[in-house]
Image 1 (tube, rainbow, N blue to C red):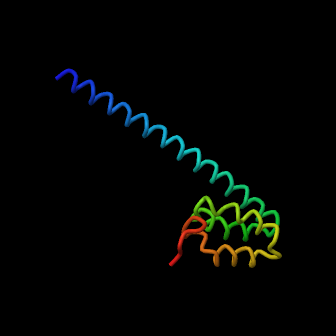
Image 2 (cartoon, rainbow, N blue to C red):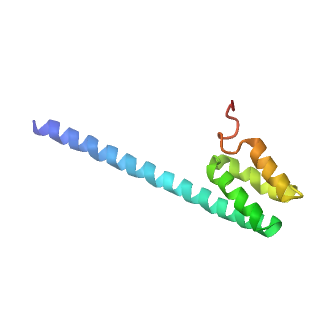
Image 3 (cartoon, one colour):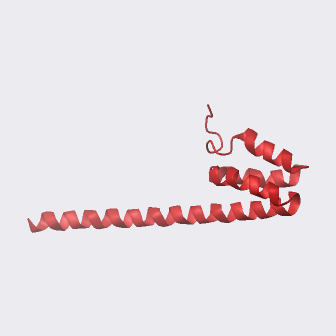
Length: 103
C-alpha cells in the first residue's frame, strides 16, 4: 500500500509541475502579445490619430498572436487609418492563426 501511495504522489507532483510550466509559458506568451498590441496601438495613434488606435485595439485583442507581426508592416504601408482598418477587417485577424482555413 505504501508503494502505491508513493507512486500516486509522485504522479501528482509531476502533473502539478507540468501544469505550472505550461501556465508560465502561456503567461509569457500573453505578456509578449499584450506588449506588442500596446506598441502597435501607440504607433497607430502617432501615425493616424487616437481614433485609429481606438478602432484597431479591439481587432488586435481578438487576433491570434501570430497575426500581430502583419500589422507592423501595415502601419508603414497604409496611407490612411481607413486603409489600415480595412486590411485588419478584411484579413479576418480574429479568426485563426496564419495558414489556418477560414470559413
